[in-house]
Image (cartoon, rainbow, N blue to C red; front, side, top):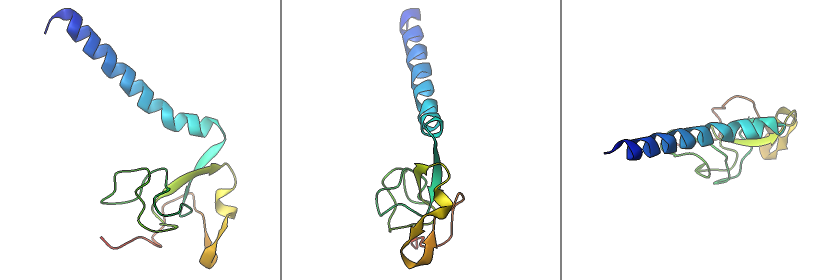
Length: 98
């Protein structure tokens, strides 16, 4: 690999890393927070537990270990079916068996 190719590869890697870092910050800057247990099946923004890859991978409605971005200050006041509530931390409820 010549020097020019190495520089291009390094620059591309750095740009990709910066792009990935900015995604969560954008959501937080826009007045949103992560709210666990409020997403419908397959509509989570991320973190759906073992065996899942991230966004859109929750297996059941209101899965406790999957989160969705919601407007800041609304997570813990959301009322959901079955007396469920949103949480700022992962929940053990409605988590499918592995």
